[in-house]
Amino acid sequence: MHVKVVWKIAIVVVIAVGAWWGWSMWKSGDKVVVQYETSPLKKMDLRLTIDSTGTVEPTELVEVSAQVTGTILELGKDLAGKTVDYASEVKQGQLLARIDDVVVKSDIKRAEASIAEAKANIAQSEANIVQAKAEHEQAKRNRERAEKLGAGDALSQAEYDQYIYQEEAAGAAVKVAEASLEQAKASLQSAEAALVTERRNLEYTTITSPVDGTIITRLYNVGSTVVSNMSATTMFYVAKNLDNVQVWASVNEADIGSIHPGQEVVFSVDAYPGRSFSGTVNKVRPNATMTSNVVVYVVEVDAKNPNRVLRPYMTANVNFITQDLKDAFVVPNAALRFQPTMDMIDPACREAYNQKLMEIDQAAEEVAMLADGSEPPKTPNTIWERRGNYVAPVWVIAGESNGMVTPVASDELREDMDIVIAVNMDGTSSDDAAGDSAESTNPFLPQMPKRDKNKKRNASKNPPPPPGTMPVRLAE
Image 1 (cartoon, rainbow, N blue to C red):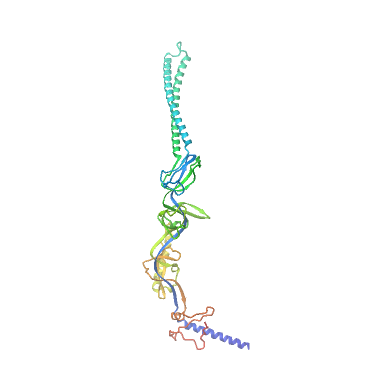
Image 2: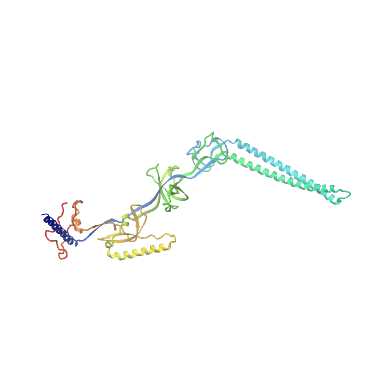
C-alpha cells in the first residue's frame, strides 16, 4: 500500500518537472522587454548656496573715550535738540559731554608758572656766563704777567702757582655757567611741553563726536565720575553711517574654499520674515576660531541698509551664492548614477563608448603623474538617452548638485531628450505586459510565466508541450 503511494507521488513529480521544462522551452522564444524609467531633459534656473549665520554690524564703530579724570557736568544735545542718548543722531564735532575742568585749569597755571621760572633761570644763567667770562679774562691777564716775571726774587713760586690756578678756575666757571644756561633752557622746554599737555587736557574735558553717525551706546550720566589713569575710559559708541552695514558670518572650513571677495550674498533677519537683503563679500578674515574641533572663519559681507531697517547685532541667516544658473539643462541625480549593462547600450555606440572610457582613464593617469598641485580638468560624466529598447551615452560636464538635480552642459543636449534614470527587467513580451497590466496578482502565491496569446509561434523551434502536461495557473 505504501509503495503504491510513493510511486504515485514520484510520477506526479516527474510529470510536473517535465511540464515546467516544456513550458520554459516554449516561452524562451518570447522577447525580453526592458522597461526604462525616464525623465525628459528640461531647462530651469538653479541657484546653489552655502548657508551660514551671522550678525549685523555697523560698517565702522567708533569708541569715544575720556582721557581725563573728573565729574561729568553736562551732556550735549543731538540733532533733534534732545540730550544725547541711545540712537541719537550726531554730527562730527558736536558736543557729547563736558567734564569738570577745575583741576586741569590749575595744572595749566602751574605749567605757566614753571615756564616763567625757567625763563628767569635762563636770564640768570646768561648773566652768570658774562660775569664768569669777565673773571676768566682778568685771571688770564694776571697769569700772563706772572709768566713774564717768572718765579724768583720779585715773585715767589707760591704766588706764581696761584695765578695759574685762578686762570684755570675762571675758565671752569665759564663752562659751569654755560651748562646752567642749557639746563635752564631744558627746563623751559619741559615747562612748555607740560603747558601744551595741560591745555590739551583742557580740550579733553569737552567730549565731541569724531564722526557723523548714530550713538549705539551711552555708558555715563550727568554726575558720574570718569576715572582715566592707565587707559582711556569709554563713554560712547558711535556707529558711522548706518545706511551701510556689514554682516559677520561664520563659515565652516569645509566651505571656506568656495567663498571669495565680491561674491553675491543674500540674507534675511527674523525681524522681517519673507524679506531678503543682498550684499557682497568684502573679505575673509585670516584668523579662525575653533569650537569643539570645528574651525570657523569670519566672513565680512557689505550690504545696503534701506530705510535703516537693519539694526546692529540682529541675527542674519546668510546664503553665499556659489552658483546661479539661468535657463540651464538639469537632470535628476539618479540619471548620473545610472549605469547600463553592455547589452543595453545601442550597438552602434558601444565601440565609441569604450574608446571614450579609455581616453578618460589615460587622461586621469597623466594628471596623477604630474602631481604639481594644479586643479585637474573636470572629468566628463555620462547620461543615457533612450533609443527604443536600447540606450545611448551622452557625455556631459556636470556642475554642482543641490541634492536633487544637477546642471549639465554639452553640445549634444536638447530639450525633451528621454533621459534614463532607472531600468526594470521583465521576462514577458511587450504584448503580455500590456495585456496583463490590469490584472491583479497575489504576491504570496507563486507566479507562472505568461504565454503570448496573440503571437503565432514557430512550431519547429518551440513545439507546445504535450496535452495534459501544461501547468495549471493558480487562482489569483
